[in-house]
Image (cartoon, rainbow, N blue to C red; front, top):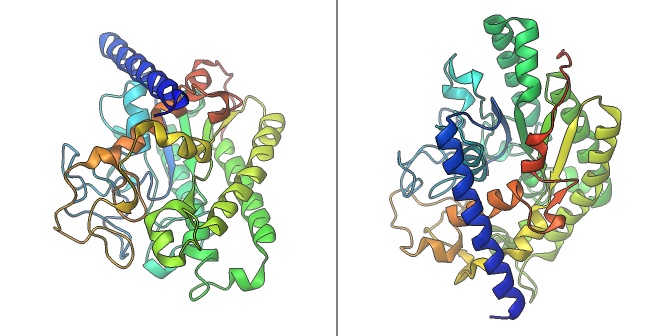
Length: 369
């Protein structure tokens, strides 16, 4: 192991100790660092919203959840997702419930709207069946906001919403389950990659503005990771001698490069908005600190669509695998991502600052439409 790798591992251990101390403090005080946490995204954050949908993109069966306390829950992972870990760090005493199962009392603390196969574009993922697109997730959040206003009154509800944390992670499927599936979608014939990405970013920007209009002020936007390095992409497209599918990684980088200026634009345009960008791509590059023994093969035996085959026995040494199934990371990788999103040891991991700094900021109350 190089000196740089040793230093990165040392920094990671320091961060883990900090997180443990922070969570101990939360337990001591009893209150989370924010009153509520609202989550928008795809299968990297879905915790059960797809369970009742007519779709191939649902994982409410073993071996999913083998390391999760309640077993299979609809999470596309062996254990915790990134947003689960963030919720823990924030001091919530239970995980943020999926919209599909949230009770009235739950919504006071936040809701998870994420849906496997969902995208920025409405048609994304339709080859797998039903899914809840970003536009539909915003519609669901509008219902939640109206319910909160009914429960708390307009001013109190909006004050609460302004203090909440929001996170959005979208765009993966707009490439993996749209543009790069020409047998199902015409987008790659209609647009160059540059033009398609620009259209995605323009639509995404409007969606983030809509979220602001619904009361969001503290917003975390996750960039795309190295989608060309997931086992499912490597199996489907081949690597031409490279470690990963460079065309897909180039698409991620193009998306991220166009998203970053939007963060600045939204912060400049929207009063009281505090929006940050999390650089998942850079974190993926630095994940060598975890010293995975296997980084290009799924831990569980996977089907043609990249999900674990029901009831098949997964690998036993799951902390040594980067990927759980052919598209989704293991819990240990999600912990790595979440901790560095919360407290960015490297300044390039978060822009203009990390989640820890974001939640420390005070903001005025502004209305929701």
